[in-house]
Length: 113
Length: 276
Picture 1: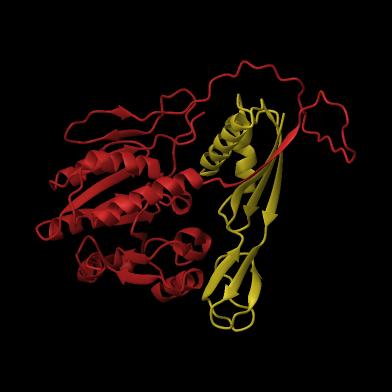
Picture 2: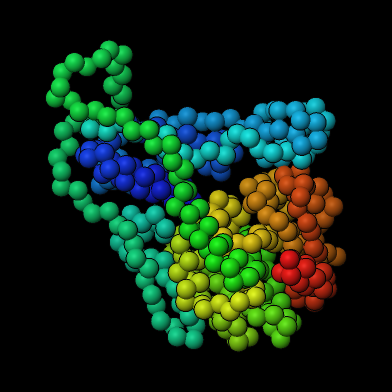
C-alpha cells in the first residue's frame, strides 16, 4: 500500500505551500497522475481520509487528472498510446520504447484561503 | 498518521537495529498534531463551481501553481545517497522480489564466497524481526536491519540513516535487501547503482507482466532455485520473453543459491559492474 506514502507526500507539499502562502486551509487540490505511475486509484481513495485528517487538506476537494501513457518506439520512431508497460509498438512490434508520458505523479495546483 | 509506516500511535514505527548492539532506534516521525484553527465551512463532497468573478473582498481565495513531484523528497534523498556512493566508489544494489524467492539465501552464499575478496555491507529491510540481519551478522558482515513496521517498502531517507550507521569503507559493495514485495518498492529510488529483481522457479512465468513496474525498473533478473526445475512447471524461456516485453534491456542469470549452480555467472556480473 505505497499509496499511503504517496498521500503523505501530497499532504507534506500542501502543508508547505499553504504555510508559504500564509493561508489557512486548502479548498481545492489538483493532482496529475499518470496511468503508468503505479498508483491504484481505489487505494488512494481508501487512504485519503486518514492521510488528510487534521491537516490543511482535511476539507479540500480533490481533482485528479489522469494522464494517458504514451511511448516513442526506439526502432521506428512511432509515437503511440500505451495502457501497459509491456505494450509493444503497433507499427513494428518492437519492445524498445521510451516512455514520454504517463509516469507523472504531481501536485499541479492548490486553491487556498 | 505516519507516512513511512502507516502507524497512528507510534507503536509500529520504522526502527533500525544493529544485531551486534541490538539497540532499538525509533526514527523521528512526523505526526501531524491537531490544528486548532477554526474551519469556516466544510464541503460535504460537493463542489462549488463559480464561473463568475467575485467582487466581494471578504473571501481571500488564492491559487498556487505548485507543479511539484509527489515523490520529490524521496528522489532528493536518493540522489544524496547516490552521490555518496559514487564518491566512495561503493557499488550499491537494491535487491527486490516477492517474499520467499530466496533473497537472503542468495546473499548468505554470496557473502560467504566473496567476503575474502570484496568488502561487503548489508542493509536488511523487513516489516518485523531481526532474523535476516542475524543471518548476515553470523557471517561476520556489518549489517543494519530496518524494520518498516506496517510499511511495505524501503524509502531513501531510511537508507540515508542506515548508511550513516554502517561506516561503509571505500570500494565496497552495499547490498540492500528490500522488503519482500513485488509492487511497492518499485516506485522508490534508494540511490542504488543497480536494481536486481529475483524470481524463483516456484513462481509463475507470467509474473513479469503481472507486476510490470518492478521488472521495468530493474537492471538484472536473477532466476533462483533452478535446482527445483525437475519438480515445478515453469517455462523459463516464456518467463524471459514476458520480462523482455516489459524491459528489453533486462539481463538474466539462472542459479541456485542452495546448490551453488550458476553462482559464478552472478559473481562475474558483480565483479564486472563493480570495476566500472
